[in-house]
Length: 227
Image 1 (cartoon, one colour):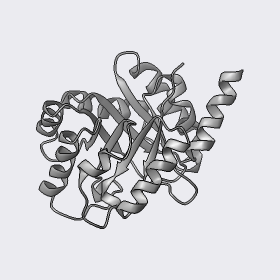
Image 2 (image 1 turned 180 degrees about the horizontal axis):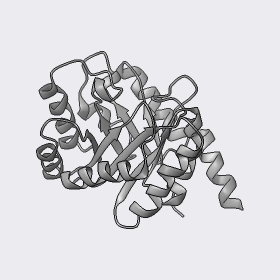
Image 3 (image 1 turned 90 degrees about the horizontal axis):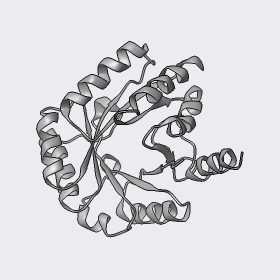
Image 4 (image 1 turned 30 degrees about the vertical axis):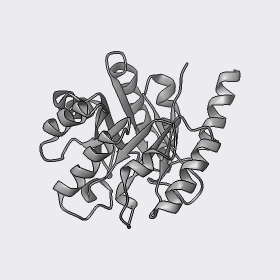
């Protein structure tokens, strides 16, 4: 069983990006996500790519999907495509983004894989609704489909996990619940076929509620693998 843990870098400046990337390597993260929408100073994606040999995800999240990018959408997308050209392995693009299909096509042409994502911050919908979102993501022709919901009750984890079990049989999917009630699905999603799970560099560095640290997440997988 291969489980990949992605460390999320939420730094607001380049020196902290470097520190967090080094920390991710020390924690034995498998992948690192650079949240470019957190950065408040100018940066060169080429310099960030040189910081590590680990696979990198470039994310420049829309404000509507919990991100902090406030500029023009054209500028936001250019940063993502520049990251693909600079050698980032994955580019996260929102399902709701303008011209998402065209953006995915451009990402592929630049040699990166695309993660087509959709976030729901108010609830976890029924399995049938998650499946409809998934079908829309498939139509964009991305490499990985990502659907993140919010758990309002423990049972919501089962909805996401049931989806992962079936969808992962034919495609690369990422699906779990945010929130303290969603920690179960964060941990079990990759065990049941999810492509990766996300974790923070340390306490106070989370990009979403319910995110455990990389060390905690890795420890959990070590324990279940022993059994």
